[in-house]
Image (cartoon, rainbow, N blue to C red; front, side, top):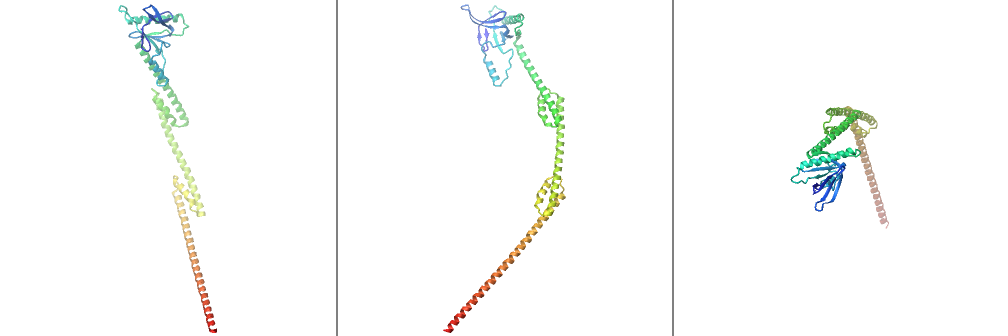
Length: 344
């Protein structure tokens, strides 16, 4: 029986020639061949003896792909699983159909496997130009072991590649960090090297030590930069305040001292005596301005009072004069009236 990738069993006759084998559908009722499929021997890759038959692995697909292969192709297409073609990719299994008096199935499977392997080997010997290797004969357990060993070898190769790449990246980063004195560029390469399997421990220790050294250098460098910036700001703030004090002594304007005093108070290490002198001068000038404003206000009030008094005196004098004029006018009128009455 022939078992395809759909696990469908089909009654077939195997015929082996010196260059190919044929899978024949034979009709026992009429003694004729319904159809057949020819497979060149150079298509053979591996012959696997199973517990019940012979599994033939070919270089190309033999018949329709089964659902398992479809799902694998779909998973590979969408990136869920990486497809890795190998010599066990295309298979068809043959199960001996034996009568009771014939040898056991494992014996028949051994005979068929040996015959296929020998025919392929003779074909290669007689046609060395053919680009194929005669198939090996293995058991299912051996196939599992081959795949397991291959997977392990791939894992070790991937680990080795990642280890070498990570170590090279770390060495390059250490060289760059030595030039730039910047330890931050070592963080990612160190993490990658620590994740790599069996990375050089001495290299990792050296990288960690370099990070510590560069971080200490960075802290010292930052401290010196901060101290230098503080010195520059202190000197600039001091010079600005001294200049403002001199200007304020001349102009007697306290507002010119406000900003320099604030700047000196924020600056580190500015002379408290200088700041106190500036604040005292500012207070002194402000007191002078306040006293001057009070004096001017008093003078203005006194002037307004005098003006008010003078205005009131003038109004009183004007009123008295008006009253006197009115009295004289009345007296004159009365006299005239008296005179007019005497004449009559």
